[in-house]
Length: 192
Ligand code: 5GP
Image (tube, rainbow, N blue to C red; front, side):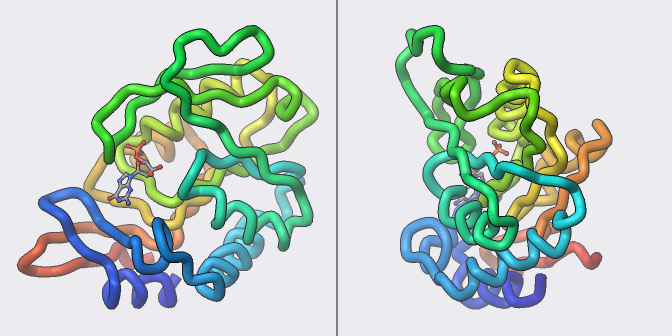
């Protein structure tokens, strides 16, 4: 999505070799018009798939998921991140690892909000190694809900999450794929 690539080029900050900071429009301050366009694009890509619910992970996925949900006219459920091991029996729970914080956490979703009747689109802000996505897959499996596809705002194509998910046959659509990036040479996007 050209508009998103342009924003990343203009306002993204490359930290070290593998972190892209987009606090100016996505992860701290939010460019509502840009996110609205992203929501519209996810709708264009997945509109014929019978999606009845969008699942995301707190906190940065929520704004994008909500924008998309307006177009699909479906609810958003966001997985919560907890450091408590004991979450009780009323939640689906999967272990994950935060790429940005370098810490393990439990991803939890109440059993009230996922069931085998659901056709789910999972939306997130970034895809790196795929830890968050694999924890979501685990939770969906426990719930019996059907994963229709994954929509990612920014995929870092030089990390292997996207490759693994596509090899599993999952329909993964990323609005921008960073092929390579460095503080000295900037960012190259994958040509679609
Ligand atoms: P993964 O689980 O795929 O390894 O990493 C994805 C999660 O880590 C996303 O939900 C996102 O919050 C965070 N993340 C991974 N890479 C980046 C990055 O380069 N920049 C930012 N802002 N977040 C990232």
